[in-house]
Image 1 (cartoon, rainbow, N blue to C red):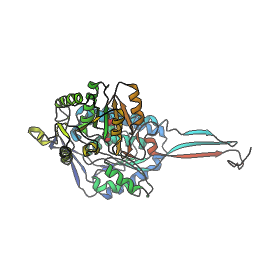
Image 2 (cartoon, rainbow, N blue to C red):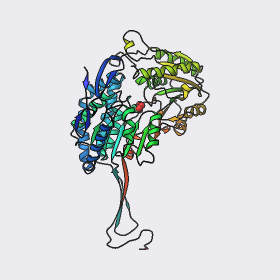
Image 3 (cartoon, rainbow, N blue to C red):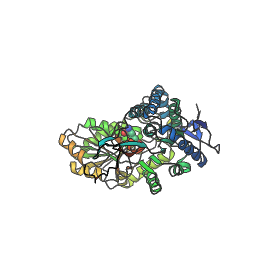
Image 4 (tube, rainbow, N blue to C red):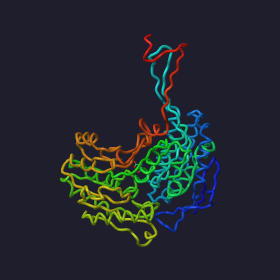
Length: 497
Ligand code: UN1
């Protein structure tokens, strides 16, 4: 069934002004057209930004607990539609169904969590040094945000942005990836069923080339929250600096799992398979490097390869399948290109390496789970983000050497260590230069109630998701209020009594 969806501007579902459309297809079967959406242009962005700006005052002045009621309702509606939406995520993006459902669950979790923030959003009240005077800091909304999201988490990442943005009292123009527009459209349809006032959340579908940069740098936009490639994020950050726009970018990763000689190898292998090949390696948190202690290196490579050989590849809707396709032909070619680079660099291809283009699989973009052993840290396949099912295994002499290699890349999003030694865990926790450190768990699976984001070229600006240092800092600014009720002029730092 082909779905047709529209843009949402000022509470109305509308076509692109040009009437153009873009189609979304199933990466497991390119004959399966999932649906179509408007291919928006600049005038559509202008209309959405104007609507969001017009809605700002009304929304800002709506008490946060009232805003929260709408978010609670949205969470309940998402829960009701979880099965439908999860299947759509799988059909449009390719990840296996349990992951599609997990994607939606992450959106639901974020909706409930941020709804709860409606009764917190707390600042500080502190004493004044002066008589009959009080002081407090409060969080206030920033204005109208551009929310620009990738295709690998078609509902979770939009939810990471939409819910904290709205609970804080901002309005939004949401531009999802043009590869997963249908899941984004359904997400917005479900959220707006909760009864959001017109203009608070607007949806503009289209390509990054056509409208991404235009939206991010639009004079009516006060802040930008972007998740995607480092190249695009860094470009947007450069463009936004100097034009008074808040910008936060979540970008790439080259996330390592360290496996020590005292690790439980069965656990480490299971974790590496999930971290490396889950979502076909298309997570910014994917475990694309496994750094193994030399004492267990050969055994690890042998056991890990044996397990990877058992992974069944196919449509994510087939319950017997472990790994789905990559998102599209361009991504498949990019990944295959990196596999060639790995071979040329002299890494040892121990498993996989090919596109699976026979039978039904030929209609989709399937790549074998691919493992390179004996990878040296300076090789491109150990340095650059591939965003596909390709894992590089490196050999370490000891923990210090392992951490050096783990940190020796330009990224620092997620990291992990498998060890049974408490001292090793403490050293890894202290010295891994990454936004997230997992102990005896792979690099994927961050929970929404903690900040999400990385160091170095993995992130710019504020972090996403919850907790102290999370996205409320991205979507609010601090205002400090002093109130003098002494009835006279008091001078801070100067008055003596
Ligand atoms: C991403 O890879 O872009 O931690 C986000 C995880 C997920 C989110 C990943 N909760 O793997």
